[in-house]
Image 1 (spheres, rainbow, N blue to C red):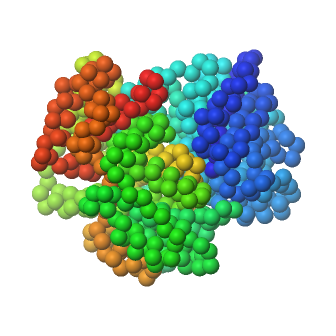
Image 2: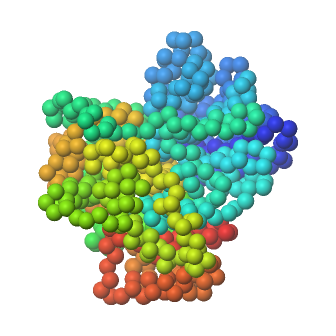
Image 3: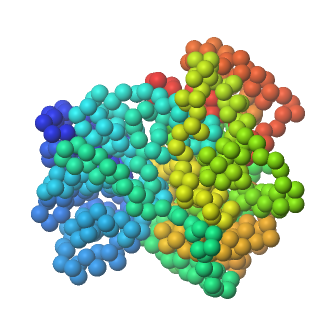
Amino acid sequence: MCGICGYMLLPGRQQPAPPIIERMAEKLYHRGPDGTAFLHRYPVTFGFTRLSIIDLSGGMQPLTNEDNSLMLICNGEIFNYIELREELRQKGHTFKTHTDVEVILHLYEEFGVHFLNRLNGQFAFALYDEKKGQLFCARDHFGIIPFFYTMAGDGFVFGSEIKAILEYPGIKKELDLVALDQVFTFPGLISPRTMFKGIKSLENGHYLLLNRDGQLTDHEYWDLVYPEIGHTDYAHPEHYYVEKLNELIDQSIRLRLRADVPVGCYLSGGLDSSLIASKLMHLTPDVRRYSFSIDFADHSASEADFQRTVASMIESVHSEKLFLESDVIAQLPKTIYHCECPVKESYNTASLTLSRLVRDKDIKVVLSGEGADELFGGYVGYKFDKIRGMMAQASPQPKNGEHALREVLWGNEDFFYEKDYHLFSDEKKQLYASSLSDHFHEIDCLQHFIIDKEKIRNREILHQRSYVDYKLRMVDHLVSDHGDRMAMANSVEARYPFLDKHIAEFAYQIPTGLKLKDFQEKHIIREIAKDIVPPRILEREKFGFIAPPSTQLLKKNHEYINDLLSYDAIKRRGYFNPSTIEALKQRYSEKDFKLNIPFESDLLITVLTFGVFLEQFDL
């Protein structure tokens, strides 16, 4: 993994002073502390910061093809590069390095832009074709690796993180209020929006083409699209799906172990990370294993006993960090700086601390369990959908404004996601300052595009939720601000075995009854795990990764928190109603008040981290 940045000038525009690209790359140093390189060839300039994982001595970028007419910078990994290299060699291509991403250059020579579905990996890249005068940029299938861009006055500017783009002359730092409303409303931001107006996040499974005249087009090359009702073909017995998925998971882990440095794993104490760790023991019996976990001082949130059970079983060198409420406060500024957005839970601070632990142990790569919940029905919402369906059949309810809004949002008036958005809109409106609430319709994210309803409509209810969770929770939150950004802040690469293209494409062939069976979530994953994961892990209830909510932070009476949420600070910033925030603080501080996470939004955490965001980016 690395940091990439650069720009392509419009015709006739002059090259900015050379220090610009250096300043952009400097903002990405944490993503690539092992080396920096640049390429200047009008009208493009590329900057690269390297975290060396494959081909430690020869993998520096930018890379060029045989005649130097193609130039590439890529952040990420192509896990099936060995197979692709062999195929390309047989077609007559020669390679200058042993690095994995060089296959992109030669695939482009062979297939043009139509090779992205041949890549099995996590990547974001920019490739300049000098003969065509065309810039080609792409982001991986699941959006694991970030890619941001904007059109400046004199050209196209891009970077792995927004802070690099902000170094380019003439880029304005202007807040996108619809994006802020997205953070309040959904699990996080929704691509292509960012917190900065005019700066976009390239969507997962998309690529951009910029021609020499400055015309920019956006194209989708892949998405996780479930079959419509009546178009499914569940023709096999259960053991077929279990065995096939088990093979794909093994294959995915093997590919993600390709590295010239040791690979560790995160242990949360839950099923998914425990399955990955257990398979590591079987797939790499002679390799030293490393595992890492976070423990919480609050006993009700601690999973240390389960984490240690798995670590002991796989005989790993296990490292754990006790995370305190005071650590949340201490880590907030750095967390939000790297997220580049406010967040609605504090657990990113724990993720940041965990990646620091990994780096302190001189490990650069870890495997993590994200993706299984979205692909195989792992959240409590899947159970609630089933209960709601049974209740609706037994006692149909009259339609109301929420049903009409669901039809607008999801294309299905009966699909319930997280909360009653009709009522929540009223709650949000009271939260904002009058200067915003008086024009609430303009910033209300529900009035703007959220998701492609045609990919939800007429699907089984579990598949509807799976698609929405994948787009809104996983792509733009769990593997972005919570995943890549918190790992790379400490120069650590996270790899996700469940987020393998072949696993995802097999997941939508699996009958929904094998995902949620008799109210047991992720049934098929449990079937795979039952012979290798400790029984006490299999038998425990699902337990989300929960760090201290704002209710606990308020009770610490910390000066930094108090200042950020003070009446005067809220009034001075002008985004929220200070009286409403005071009322929320009072309510959250009551002795008998308990925030019902994950069903109730921690509004104060979002207000708090938004204040930190404004400070970090001088807005």
